Image 1 (tube, rainbow, N blue to C red):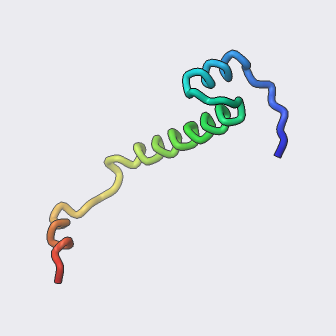
Image 2: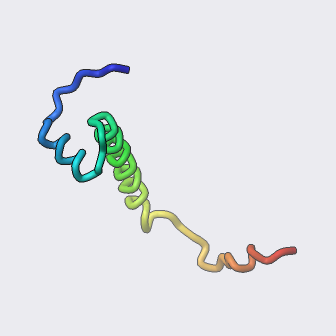
Length: 66
C-alpha cells in the first residue's frame, strides 16, 4: 500500500544510520514495530502486582514425570 507521509528527514536519516538500514522503508517499518512492542511491554508492566498467585504452587512438582 503506497502512502505519502511528511516525515522529518533528519530523524529518518539518523535512525537509518543508527540501525544500519539501507532503505527508509526498512527504517520506518522497524521503528513502527519497536514502537508497538514497547507499548505492549508497558501494558504488561502495568499488571505487575495486580495478578494474584498461589504462594503454595510447586512448579517443580509439576515437572516430575508420572
